[in-house]
Image (tube, rainbow, N blue to C red; front, side):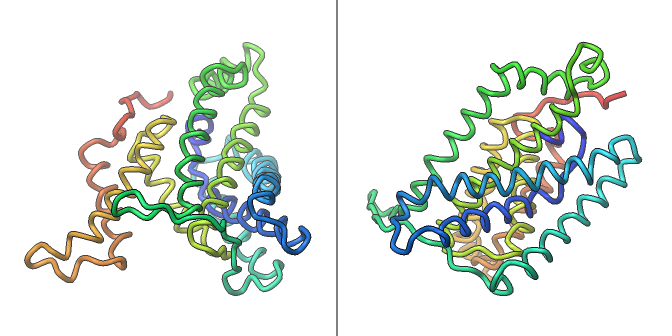
Length: 283
């Protein structure tokens, strides 16, 4: 969404995701001891979202907006610098963040579906992902602000002439992206049982990969890209080693390799992504 509007690959998005996880953890730690996670979870989502959104809005206002008309390399370097700065800020300032912090777990399940064992955290993620996708799609397609986002993405100068406050729209896009990043961070914490200051780097790369696989700017494509990426990693991890002559290329340590091999293949043969459309470069 951000790329579609300002043509910027926000390499700091992974770190905004990471700060959402620490924001959610902070909310849980300040609640009375013994508070049920089922009761705390809504507050954790709010706390994580506020943390991520505030940082994203600050980044847009002070790091990206002044460079909006600069050569494309300038905001890219700023994004990388912001990513490193956020990592080190959490590493140095958050208590005991030099090592992974334990994230609370939902005490329910597991539930068995045939040979599949479903944990409570996984169920939360499976439910949260399509709900977030539908909410975002309806917002972009049906709301006044969403239509303004589409207009800004298509032609920001014309949109501004038609009365659209493009600065506000761009900031809103950053805020919405950060909001859903915080939800994803809570899902990550529930799945892996911990958060750490460096978790955003790989998550950001995977999110970018999923967006490219599905088609940059396509909301449903991003969801499809994430599913394809996850399936590719899981299937490659489980079955590549069974192929004669490829025994050394299987296992969990190769999951990321096969994910990016898939990305390279998509970029070579269908660069617009699975659901993307070929468009001419903006003049």
